[in-house]
Length: 73
Image 1 (cartoon, rainbow, N blue to C red):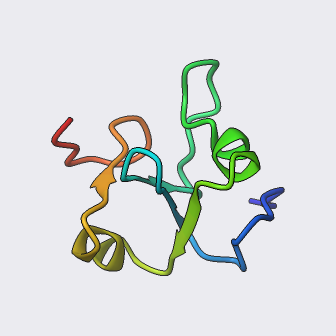
Image 2 (image 1 turned 60 degrees about the vertical axis):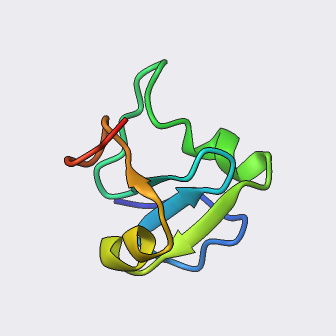
């Protein structure tokens, strides 16, 4: 997958949304109209990159229900 994302991302697989503490898997992004909206997260400056889901969870980020399993939302 060729990633189009920039912002704070430097090739990491996971992107946290600092606005709602949700983490997304960029290799499994839901691109539907009501999907993950990664570009919007980056454009708003709410992007927090992670190299692992474990690291994101350790900082209190909840998995996205659309691109990851285990969401508590």
